[in-house]
Length: 86
Length: 233
Image (cartoon, rainbow over all chains, first blue to last red; front, side, top):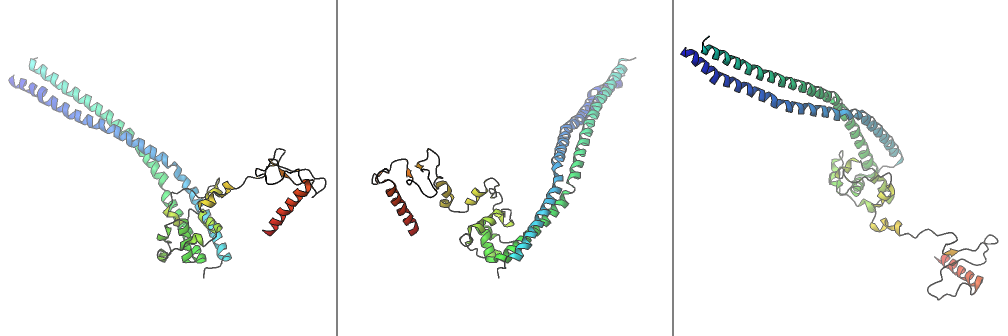
């Protein structure tokens, strides 16, 4: 009979607080991760949106090529028209 | 049932209740994390997909720009000579001669002549319009030189202050109309006037006779004197 009371006391005074303490630590850790992960998701979404203009690089590439070609044409003409320095 | 057994059952029930509460809460928190991570992964995948061609495109652009730099530097050095080319660039962007040309390492040692005093204004202006020239790296953040609205005003910055203010100090255009300071009498036949035009305001000096004294003769003499002075000049 005494042993049963001792077991009850251990359950109530030792096991239950330890279980509650450990589980509460796990829950707090999980809850602290949530806002961080949500910020990461928001940043990733915003970063993806910022790169929408990256497709315009193809237009820039085409314009650069045209510009350089035009400059090359002018350069060729100038090379013919103008005398060399020496 | 003994009291000790009842207390044990209650203790076990409390432990199980605590387990259920905290584990369910943890599960809910982990589910939130999973959803947020899914969103983050979606965003990251979008970033990866959108930035995939950037490297290739930028590399191509740089290759073409490098070719343009080579072309223009080579042409400038070929046509103007190394010394004048460096001087021209240094005249446009002071201090740029120290950087020299990319494909001409010897250009760094060339002493740049004061090209602004050698070349004509037009040459320097045309050259300055090419602000995007690679040698302009010394002042890439400066004001735009080629302003489509005020292009002519921007070109004035090339010259000393006296020349810049010259247009503002030029006399105004002649005033015409019934209230103009100089009135012309309509001629009866081409080239023949009754009298020469005189200012509507009387001269301040008083040295000259009034316009009505002498009439056409004196006005004609004054006109002839002015004409003679113009011919002498």
